[in-house]
Amino acid sequence: MIRLLAKIFIKNRDDIENSAVRAAYGILCGAVGIALNILLFAGKFFAGTISGSIAITADAFNNLSDAGSSAITLMGFRLGEQKPDSEHPFGHGRIEYLSGLLVSMLIILMGFELARTSVEKILHPVPVEFSWLSIGILGTSICVKLYMCFYNRSVGRRINSTAMHATAMDSLSDSVATTAVLIATLAGHFAGIQIDGWCGILVALFILWSGFNSGRDTLNPLLGQPPSAEFVASIRNVVMGHPGILGIHDLIVHDYGPGRRMISLHAEVPANENVLDIHDEIDNIESELKQKLGCETVIHMDPIVVDDGVTKETREKVAALVNCIDDQISIHDFRMVVGATHTNLIFDAVVPFKFRLADEQVRAKICAAVKALDGNYFAVVNVERSYTA
Image (cartoon, rainbow, N blue to C red):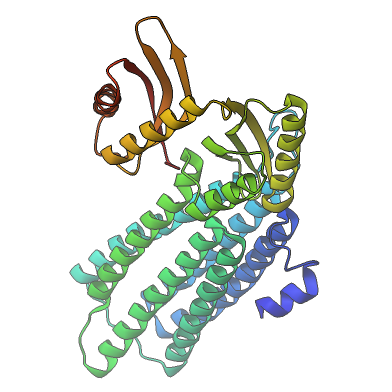
């Protein structure tokens, strides 16, 4: 159904890199979610009324709150699509993350509420009036919620939206909760045992676990998380695809919401080339990154001596020594400053954030290796931590 509605209501639906298309998908899924949840509320409320089941009635109002969650998702995409302004020069894309976080909080709240009512049912069990109509409505609700989980997750993967993933998890939690109500109703009728409360406790734990996971996934982009390895590789491929670039480092990605990322990086360029020609090449790279990845980019040029055989050979030797210490360490901005009594080898060493050695330990090992290479060499090393090391 979502695919059919997307064909009807979303222009250029395959251009998912376009922020307007992403917003259209989010708004469409939110609107469908509101409609389906209201229908489920009406059906379950009717079934709960005729059966006298508090569990079914409570599940009905849970669907009504889910309609509110879908409305939050819809508004998140609508508000996130607003253009940049003087107070928010990088746009409003992070509102989508906030809407996903709010949905996660509602999931957690639902889990705590279900746990509370389940404990009450264990302490004070209440028999439920059996009705095949109620069973049919509950079964239909499970199927609808599974479908909502499927299409929200599918769209979430397609447009890379944490808010849609949170909504999908909400639908899955509701499906599990309704399944527990159905099992408890059948067990009470055919086996004469009241397991409403115990099923509710298990479901509540599942819902809380789902809510915390969804909250973590939506909170991470707000706090700042490293880009995916695939995205870093895409950046590297674009930049290194230009013959004038010798290497890149100090890559930083700022995420201001889906489709609103800014990149800064250092590009190593030959020091003996014409600076105007290199600057033109850098402009071309920035334009290509914007066109292919939709990112604004700032590139700093680092000149590298390439026509000095001694410097080139020494750099290669030092790089090999550093790799012997650990192949996760890389070096850049290598310079040689020759003095009357010794030569300083000045460079940066990049290690991963969770590297096994402290910065001082890395620096000490590199300095010792350089000293062993030549007694007249002194390493001046700046150790950097990077998620792209």
